[in-house]
Amino acid sequence: MIPEQLTQGQFDTVYNFLSLTIAAQLFTTIFLFSSRSRVLPRYRQALVISATVTGIAAYHYFRIFDSFRHAFTTDAAGGRGIYTQAAGESFNEGYRYVDWLLTVPLLLTELVVVLALAKKLQASLLARLIPASALMIALGYPGEISADNMTRNVWGLLSTIPFLYILYVLFVELTKSLDRQPESVRKTVSNLRILLFATWGVYPIAYLLPIYFGDTGADAWVGKQIGYSLADILAKCLYGLLIYKIARLKSYADDPAFAAEEGHHEQERAAA
Image (cartoon, rainbow, N blue to C red):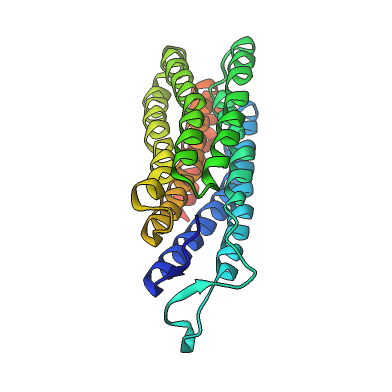
């Protein structure tokens, strides 16, 4: 639940973290789109999907940022003082859930695509993961907008079931896929498993903060915005860059001539 007041420090903290997230998502999108030619054609789809994820996130963070700026106002000279909820305005947390409903299935898809697993296995994984991800987001939203701790706990618990199922399937399948990946890729894929657990684990922690600090606690609300923003940077931007690294390494392993050509281009760039 949105707090009635924010101190100057709390307002600035949320403002700056939202701004940081916009920049991270936007420029990761630009980088991934511009880097498509640096991997073999069979892996470019993964980069396009990854760039689409961060592009969607950048758009929604613009909307979140705009909603936040209009939700709080201050009468202090120069805009320095206590911020209170603006009359007729509210902070729309729904933008995050619309974003996650679109981007989480795409995040799972780009991972499956870049690993270049057998078509039958790809189809099986996506058939399990995408419905589970949609269910996870849908179940979390009623608790997010509720002012009642019991309601938030119940919906949060229900949302955790598909959440744990997704992590289990990913961990098992990523572990199985390690033996089928080139030697140069295995460490990166192994690190990706750790990133998934570490970053996805931030979301439920941020979700639970209002329960432990009280529904109207400004500190809990600010902490939740920080947690969601950092998790989105790690789970989308850093994740996307790891997908790019995997695509590059697999391209080198699949085609030595391509690797030699790319190495030559890199030497030319370094010399310039």
